[in-house]
Image (spheres, rainbow, N blue to C red):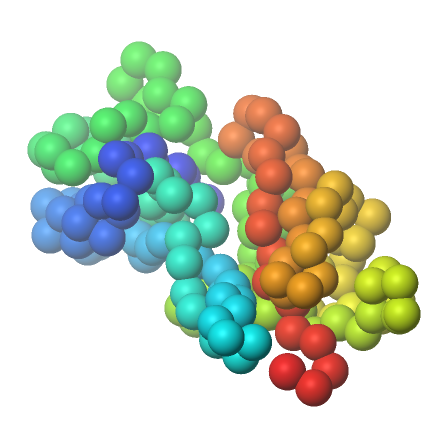
Length: 171
């Protein structure tokens, strides 16, 4: 199961490294950041870069949450474990984990890749593959020229807007 750990935005890599050093490797499967590919247009040229999907969050996959929680108390670079109550913390819900895994599409680097898309003359998406394919009905904003759309989903107890990158034919 996945668990979300909230940390200071900008210190996610440091927090993940601290967790990997301070938490017994036998008590968890993986500690990772979720990332996304995004496009910057510089002088009319599209350049792909990778950025954090959820700034301020580190994720850990474990079957031993009580043990991991006790060890996380020693890691100074995290602020709180989401869902913490007493001496336990709760997992990302099964539906949320499945949604996130669906976006990742098996990517080993935990990166949501650009979605290949086709648009018409009015800049409406008429065909799409990749992570966005199943979530076109959740698009709340689109900026085709800037190569992204924003979808709204319910995650971690509230509605969130997630930026998803696009790759158009000819890019």
